[in-house]
Image (cartoon, rainbow, N blue to C red; front, side, top):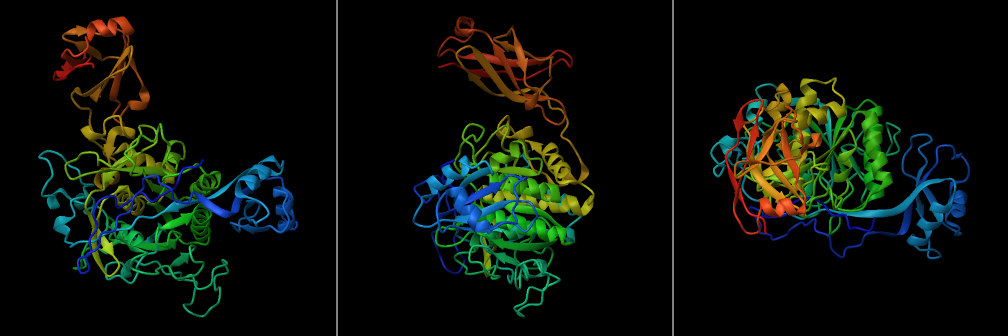
Length: 550
């Protein structure tokens, strides 16, 4: 609960074409402030009457005079509040006391998340390797690290009816490659100072700035680089003779700024506000389908988890970055990415490079990370120009763009169905074996055509040892009918875990529990042993993989 949240992006380079800079965003945990010191988030139980004096109830809940309650959503009976504290009580004591109150479902600090800074470069489609292998000068022969966008565009280039939310820093929606795809609130009159659509936000023309509490969704080039880059990868206008193209040539970008300042910091409460705004606008008839969350890195928040669940109920997909710590987040959770484990509408995205390899900085997680997408040296829009960034923040909007294409082609799909389609049709890559769900890299074309990769010939790609077990990672293993051989001798007690199955039914992992002494006899320390896998039902055998136990 006490990890620092930081945006999952821009891990490597970003230098302006006209003004050289050397700023780097990092998602690594550090000493930055974990949560606000003057407020907490409280969710009341459903049966609690919320029409009474909210401030008085807040005083009773935290047992401190002079505190003030503020609702985080206008939805009736939601019961989620931000309680503003005073100097009479600490955040820690307020959370503890609130948890003791029988009216409270949960209480937590208002955690901060952090954006990353960036450095841009020169743009051209023939350098956008993440969209097409035709643009890749360094791709390995036979590997397809791109998302196959050029093939997907033969089917659809998106829809102007679909709205994608960039919940991030602000977005330069006046950019020459974004202006045509900027969402404009059809029920608001710009600059009249009136809440025309009655949603509680005055002049919310292109979205809202929850960081500063106003309608200025773009504040400055330095503060809003990150969100502008993300927006371009989702939906920079395509085939217009300018700069770059997004995955979806046709889409509307709604900017919900909640990250800002010199650190790109934002609070969980403002993230929840942004999600609730998107839900409310969808309920009002705006076709919001995707929220892109290229940030994270910290503690589990029930408020955020429930907001994502509410987005699912409203028909909205939540796409988030896996993170840039190089960790396995099955073991070291990272939020909101870890919500993808059990949230039907949450997708978490790792990063691959132009060689098809897992990016050195990218988090992974067989259960927690849904798939990977290109995330190294990605060209996109930056305020007033174009630039290049690396990080899982850059891979995330590629998946959001694929979701836009998929919904433009099959508008009746639910968020869970879109998630499952994108994950199941991901292309297996050796670098991702058993590290992300389905071991795959996102493919726009395969998602649109519902193409599932065919079964592969058995291949051993890695071997791991524990005190009594040997684990084989690879492709093409048949459940219930695969034999591990060590120097030609079959190993006993091979077990199968169906969670390691690809959509085509083959497995990526086998385990043999030999026991301590038999393991040492079969794999003497420091001695090379040849491993292969035989599928008796098909007669296929993998090439031999030489390994040694140390």
